[in-house]
Image (cartoon, rainbow, N blue to C red):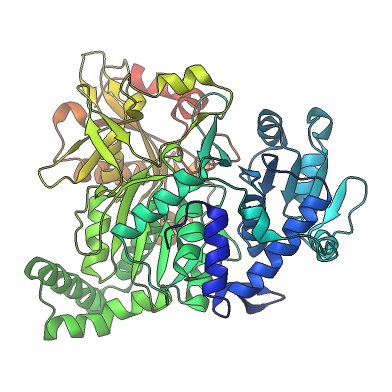
Length: 587
């Protein structure tokens, strides 16, 4: 398929794969499915319903919901009408949602349920362009400017003169497809303008790098409002004719993997870090023969990777250890695609030894999003792979990664100056990341340019490599390396309270604020920090640590919706403790 627009792609794929399963989802405690033909009918009725309430080509229509089939139906209906979808993270506050709705001049909004509807209603007076709220949950009766999803589809069914195919032919590749607001760590979010061409060329580029097979099944659980999941587990999978299973929630991913047996999953490194930590913790607890077998199996896996041969020993290791891990991932997984944050090289290698392949890629919302990725037959852990076939990458004199390609955004909505500032004079997009290309054209990301720490002694330090190394400690849940304009490097550390309470009976019922005061716990975490940072230069090493009683989270304002730590907010929140840390002498 070589479609020019997402609308064309939708029409062609639903025709070719009419009777094939497209979606798998759980309703009333049972997993059910819908074919591509079913999806075509759902979208047709919804699009007709949208036209009946006044939606025209170019109108902004927002989606505020967690992953579910209706999210996809809404997205395709908007695209087929030539509308512009405005995606909003369901975790955003009412005020943040209002900002996006106002800035985008959204006319209609799809919301997941009564709770999200109430969020919108609480700020409705601030959004003059908003005309209708469409509630996906069918038990919502509507009223006022609110209408139920099913009700709107039923209205659409009655529009006998509606022709979806005719609507799609009016959509061009240069038409705006979506506005995705960046969840930046500072300032108001910016609306990234992406066209049909941006997304379609990125799908084509991605599929030229990694094959998605007709029989593949994705498990969609990362937010569809994020460009990574939307590209991999939504557009690319649909384009390929694969099946898309929708997780019930972020909390049920483990059971949903077992229930749906995906072959491909897009995930962020946090998932692998948690699986890795839990696996090692369980092995330590079991000890004895099981620990010996596990360590032996990993050594066998490591040797098989180095030699490229999987012999009799590997078959035994696979049966005794690796197959059990794969079973917890659903039993049929071909590979993970990792993105959204840096993957630790050690964790990537560990999973490869255990016969689970993680392919890391790289990109930004502004690049639709994929710029580079590792391939099934060509990958290097610690890198984010090679550029896609239709993408160019080069490194600026100051180390910043620059990109060119048909997937680069049209610009920031209503922000011409900021748009101009992210392009060079010869139209290379400035990613804001620093890194380097090796002799084989594999890209390594060092850190965000704005995250670089410059100590009072003039040393430039990228915190990301240290954070990637230290998070491997089973006693560290989250870490933020700090030290800008200071005379040495320190770290804010959220301990793994679950492991501490599990390993030490005296802390089983202790509050977190008491645990972080305990000298034994401090010593354990400090010891792991020293062990894991031993190979770094002395000036890069963490000299002091500050243990924190709660995780960085979206709720406390220290994580973005894409789970990136807001460094400025975190440092401001703990400013007093950080100052005290630096005032005390180094032991």
